[in-house]
Image (cartoon, rainbow, N blue to C red; front, top):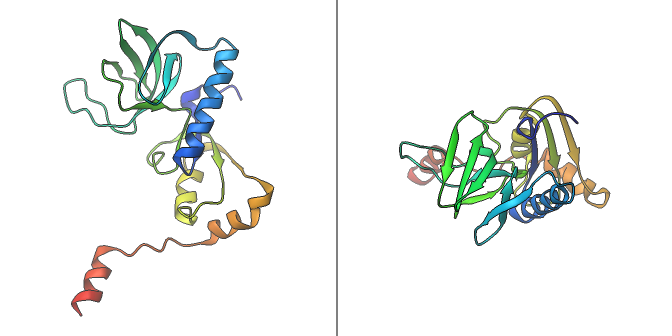
Length: 178
């Protein structure tokens, strides 16, 4: 698939799977010399020029960015990370405490994004239901591929059919006030 990284989303249901996929993709890109050289690290991860990242906090200053913004590290200079966000903006980060690798992101974090290709990791998880899968499946313009493990197929199928059991506040209020 020749699309740029910013035109692809690899979606997963939980942080454990996301962290595993991010680590494996970063390792493969290091082995291929697609990323490397100078790096910065926080308590969780190491970041190289060329890595995909996701920001996990809002910044309301003049150089603003939002929780969930995704981008690519353009350079690492003097302890600062220069990033090119997918929305076209460029930012310089001095504090990378709330930065994570962004090759894979959660289904919830993908809300509002539209890309050419989506790769969805379907797995047996109590948090997944048809609404959450629908979020992931509808992020693409052209292609969505769903991957899973054969031994979990029946459970995943049930999740695709399970409706969200959340109750909205208005219904809750009516039930308790009546």
